[in-house]
Length: 275
Image (cartoon, rainbow, N blue to C red; front, side, top):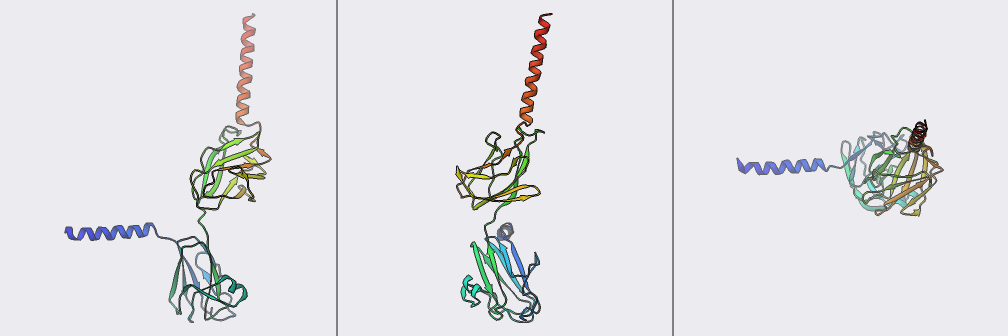
């Protein structure tokens, strides 16, 4: 019995590991009639329905092309320049060879870049696989500026990054700035932040580690979306606007209230002493 347990255990662990580290596979179908130059489209991406043959994936992902046509087709890599000129030049990065109806071809993409392809039998069928860095998941920091907001709860800032931002955000109403700090090193070349308008108005200047940086800005229903360039070693991100949180927020009101109450209490005490 012991002789068989070890091989079974090894198979189980290997199978579990392969599932745990499986990458995403995207499917593109070559529809029926695609071999006709007058066909309405030559590709159909399963997950989105996009029919251009253009797809965006992350490093380690695979694309599988299914032939649902009656004709033979190929998925053959060509240079970017040849796509522009129409004089297709095979670059040897990948090639399915001829595959017929009901068959498929799978290609895994490990490197970042644009990978152009066409059908060597029907050159009018061409597309591109964009392999981009994984930007990370949507994350958030809660209670930003809680000491200044009117309700004492602060604001939620959403961001996209492959590492984390520290929860403590430095808010400077006088300087009209917010300063975020990146916890670890990042493999990305940018970070996306969504800033609520009640937290900061018109963010118009960004400094990454003290250096002013160009950035992209877009107004959304959730606030102002900023896309900022960063490096693996970037740490501090300071964002300046025309106003940061109401100047007379919760903390200021609380301090003023305490001061007024204290003054009234002292005044009343002195009056009672002279009675």
